[in-house]
Image (cartoon, rainbow, N blue to C red; front, side, top):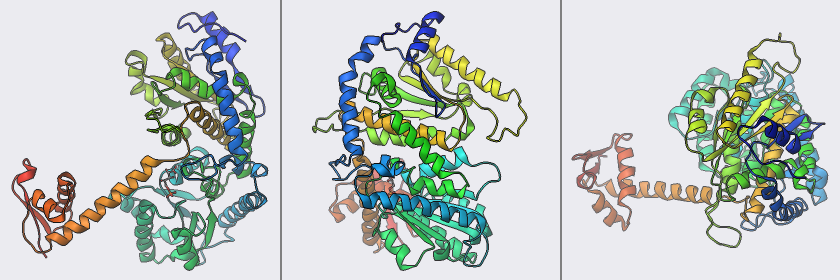
Length: 533
Ligand code: PA5
């Protein structure tokens, strides 16, 4: 069915496009409106063959194909919310068992059946994990925790010494009654490992007992798993190899925080499963994830020419743009396509929330560079779930601001689309996440990149390890107390990395009293560095 061409100013045309392109899911109460993206009927139609191919690829992936050929593994995050789809019985049974296990553990912690080793009720959660092991849990808590419900959450997702100290100090004595959850799929990522060591020393200083307060979420037999086993930690949850970090929110990684804030995790999974189901419809015009992927494709000519600006009009979804930033950019941002050709693909994602951002960068969106499309997220119900708060006009204003910005952008011929949900609750958050996960999967197929590896992340981990190794070599060399220039150090170590050596030494000089420099920082090559013992 064709629809009229986009018009920035003609309200009748806009209305007709709105009606023609409207997608709605009655069970979930979710709408998708792509009518203000500027493609025409023919352009959308022409994408059909590539979308049909993408449907086929996703269906093979759901059937258990090796989707991530680089890492020779299956990609099964869709099975997490529909265990029946898992290709083998063992995975199916494990998934069902783990959901029950998480539910029981969460409820036992909340009701005090499971207590701290000192016999007290747990009050707080310290969540340690980075990337997919940190962002999903953060989103769950920010989006779904209701006032006064569940435990208080604190997150460590970095090795910033000041940040870690501040968080641990803010918990203070309550570390004794804090459940510490360390998440690392690989079990060897340095950031969570270091954060864990630091937290452990704080916790033990205030009289806590680490093993009896600790939970690990990781792959079986990883370093973290082995540590947890050998020390008999309070609980371990398994992360299957076929769950990627950025798509792990419907695994224990997202379910455990859900259970610990007291939400119904089955409803969360059911919302995701319903969106998966809707996104299996093999028709571009009736499949929300395909419509989303096609809109991104057409807005950016299939090469990511336009950035995705994520603007949810709800404080609870403030983290959503960061969450999507990882999901989209780590999945699609690839140098090579699957045939090994250099394609330098990706879509840049940024955003925060409305209406706040209207008073920041939205000025440029309306009047400046046209290098983006906006993804609005609208929540219809203004009050909380039980409707106990009196109706006030704040929500009317928020809605008015969204509509106003949507109109202003449209009048300026700026691409925008809107996802509307009746309310923000566990099933709808699950559905929203599934919608984007599947759109990313389809888009990746359309541009022929592997959405499930992250060579750039791995390269960063390796490069950091090399720098730390170089730092140790510099320390060893300078132990003799002889002042040396960067060039002399570089030659003595047989390296060709003057700049790295300078950067390491500059950091050491400002943090380790035994290191000093002679000369002028303006002229790095003339400085002489030494170490006093
Ligand atoms: O999405 C990903 O795969 C990454 O961002 C990982 O989540 C991140 O690097 C953390 O890895 P791990 O969970 O193994 O510690």
